[in-house]
Image 1 (cartoon, rainbow, N blue to C red):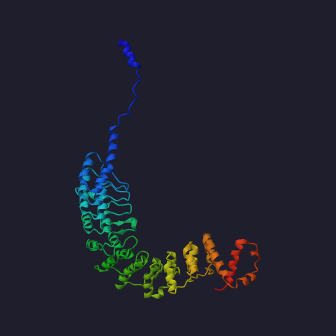
Image 2: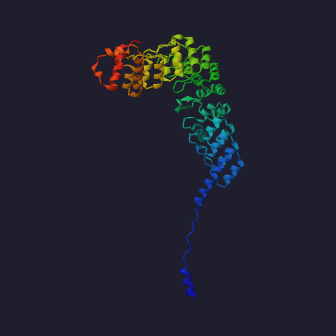
Image 3: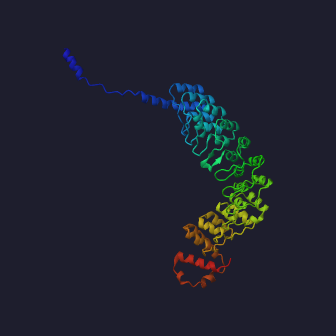
Amino acid sequence: MQRARREGRRRQPEAAAGPRPESREAEFRRRQEALAPLLLHAVLKGDAGRAEELLAQGAPCEAEVSTGATALVLAAATGDAALVELLLRKGADRFAQDNAGASALCMAALRGRLAVARALLADVPEDTARQLLEQRTAGGESPLLAAAKGGHREVLAFLLDSGADIRTTAASLGGVGVLGIACRKGKAAVLQLLIDRGLSVETADGLGMRPLMHAAASGQTATVDAVLHLAPAPQMDAKDNLGLTAAMHACWGGHLEVLKVLEKQGADLKARDNNNNSIAWYAAASGNCPLLLHVLEKNIGLLDARNSKGRSPIYAAVKCRKAAAVTELLKQGCSIGIKDNRGWTPLAWTAANNVADMAALLVAKGADLRATDDEGRVPRQIAEDCGHSKLGQMFAAKAKEMLLLKPELPDLLHKLKDKSLRGGGAAAEDRAVDRLAEQLGP
C-alpha cells in the first residue's frame, strides 16, 4: 500500500512553473522609476515635505525631466533654497547639467536666486567652488555671465566675492564679457558694480565690440545713455574689428532712438567702416524707413555713397531683402542704374545671387534689363552664368513683355536678318530678344 502511494505521487504531473521572483535590484529600479516623476512634481510644486517623504521611499535624487534638468536644477530655478538644501543632503550632484548645459548654480544666477546660490556654494572645498563657478553651458555661459545677463546685482556681487573671475568671457558668443552681456541685455543696474570691481568701459570682446556697442546694437536706449554718463566716459566713435562704431551698430539694428541719443552726445555720423560703408548702408540694411530717412536728412550725400566695392546703400537694402527700404531710397532719388566696381547694377547683383523677389521688385521699379556689366553681360546672362536658370528665365520673360509693348517691334522684327534665328525655337527667341533689346531705346 505504501509503495502504491509512492508510485502515485511519482505519477502526478508536476505543477506549472510560476514567475521567477524579481531580483531585489530589478525591484529597486522599478520602484525608482515609479517614484521619480512624483519627486519631480513635488519639487516643481515646492513641496519639501512630500519630496523628503519620496526620497525616504527611494526616489532617485538624479531624476530628471525631458530637458535633462535634474530635481536639483529644477529646485534652483524655482528658487526654493529649502528644497535645494534637502536634495544636497540626500546626495544630489551639484555639477549636474540639463541638455543646454545649465547647472543648478547657473540657473540660480540667471533667475536671481541668491539664497540658492549661497546653498550651492556652502561648505564645499575651494577647488569644488571654483569648478562650479567655472562650469559652462553649451553656449559658453558661466554663472557670472548668467547673473549679468539677468541683471541680478546681488547675485553678481556674491559670485564675485566667492571667487568668480570678473574677466570671464563666453568663447562661443564672440568672446563677449560680463559687461558686454549686461549692456546687450539692457541691465544698467549692474554697470556701476562691474566698473567699481575693476572693469573698464572700454573693455572689448573677441570681436572688438565695447559695452556701448553692445547696448546700441540691441536697442537698449536707457543703457546707452547710462554708459555715456559713466566716468570716465567711453570713446564715442571707437570701432570694432570690422570698423563699426556704436552709431553704425544702432543703425544696423534699426534703432532710431539709440541713434538720436548718440547724436546728442556728438557721435560722428560721417564715419566709415573697414569696407568704407557709411551709416546709411546700415540703416538701409535694417529696413527701418524712419531711421533711413533720419540719416538721409542729416546728410543726403549718403544716398549714393559708395563703399570699397563701389556699392551704395540700395545694394544693402537689396542684399537684406528690405523692399520698403529699396522703395524709399528710390523715392529719395537714388539711382536704380548705379553700377559697382564690377559694372553690376543692383539688378545684376540679384542675378548673380539668385534673389528673385528683389529682382522682380527692381524690374517693376524700372531697372534696366539691358544694362551690361564689365564683361558685357545683361542680368539674364549673369544669372545663367551663375547657374540660376530659373531667374534667367524670369528675366527673359520680363524682357519679352517689355518688347511686346514697344510700338516699333514689328519694324524691328522685319529688319532682323539673322538666319540662325529661323526655326530655332525658344533658344532662338531668346537670342532675338537680346538682339532687339540692344536696338531698342530706353
